[in-house]
Length: 319
Image 1 (spheres, rainbow, N blue to C red):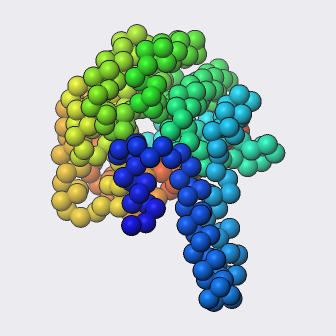
Image 2: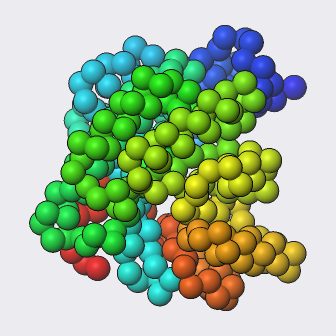
């Protein structure tokens, strides 16, 4: 049994009380390298040198204390990944993704460095709120300056911990209402993860519906797959957008394409637009484009990698 197996077991049962799994991984690797040094010194030294390149996340891992400090000092910022129209060129919107600046402001912590801590400590609620507030502020500025039009959509993901708390839901509603943006430009994304906990599913559905009713913003199902929770959300909530899970981007066999074609037809019938995520090469783009969906957008490294506010503003100028 390796540490990944233990982590998966823990995530399902949440009973070990371990937050820093990356540190545990590092301990296991350290023991292994120590054994190598005693038996094969040269190989052990090479393993130590390679550890910094093969396993860099260990040295950037954020503890709860560091994460609290980053939140307190407003070091949480949105990075933006563009959404592209069916023509493969037109910028139709962007997704705001959480990043944390380092002290020198020249480097950032990626989600792999802090998300596990954020989820296990509940700090994800504050991170979500900061990202939404800053993202809506940026988009309002771009709209005011004429860098984008009113048909532009900014989307953001809200974690289940925000959606089970009425206090947090009301805070999100307040942030949205105070942004000054037309509701049609704002899209909230929820994932299967948000509905996986049976004990909180009804509360999440009720609160998502409340956000939709009070703000009139758009609602997207993120990472849509064939999971039960995805189907529940699609059939229960007033969904505007279906974001197809990036796992489908690597599936080009006939069965997968038939399923996607069926899903797109169903989405069109219920009035949903489609966003294909994880497009990394021209072949994937052409495969999805061959499905012939008129209301479709694309998101992925082929078109644009997530970048900071200034970087995205420069991307808008080049478009």
